[in-house]
Amino acid sequence: MNKVFLYLYPIKEYTSVFLFHDDGLYDRLNISRPLPILNEVINKRYRQKGYQVVYVLYPDKELYGIDKIDNDKIIYTDITFSEVSAYDYKEYEKKRFIPKYPNELLLLEQLGNIDELVVGGYHAMDCVKRVAQESNNLGIKTLIDLDLTDLFFSIYQTNYFDLNYYSPEKFKNYMINRYGTEYSTYEEKKFDKYYSSPVYGFKTLSRKK
Image (cartoon, rainbow, N blue to C red):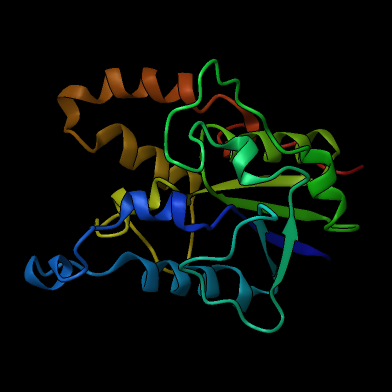
């Protein structure tokens, strides 16, 4: 079985948003640095379990924060980061900017013939979802590992987080009850609204016949 873990857009522009500007704060606040843990989780959950690890980059950007090993692969989008970004090279906001997305089918074609795809990276409700849904539409067994999207940076230090395993059921239970049982009904309604797509793993996934 050809299994792939696909991680979208590990570039400095996205990753640095979730890091302390002053790296020394991690030591002063006794907080574990997230990127070593992220790399450890990718290795334990996927590389060590027979998945081909593949990173997606824009052709005008380099890999950032990721420990790539020899057997890992990099594939590229059909558009540049400058076309995706709402800011120009001087970091001024572009006027009348309309978001542009990479061609998801072209990305998946670069993976070859695969049976199972797990998707992570940036961003859970946008690009990650779009790629996963295209994969699911092709009949590939597809799941988004929400622990390894941009949500990682808010949950990697919690008791919920498991280095070795992702469970959609455990993720849902954590998200619904994280603020206490008095908020669980509201959180469940919000959860069902945002995570209704089958690629999040909370409904039966399509499979190849």
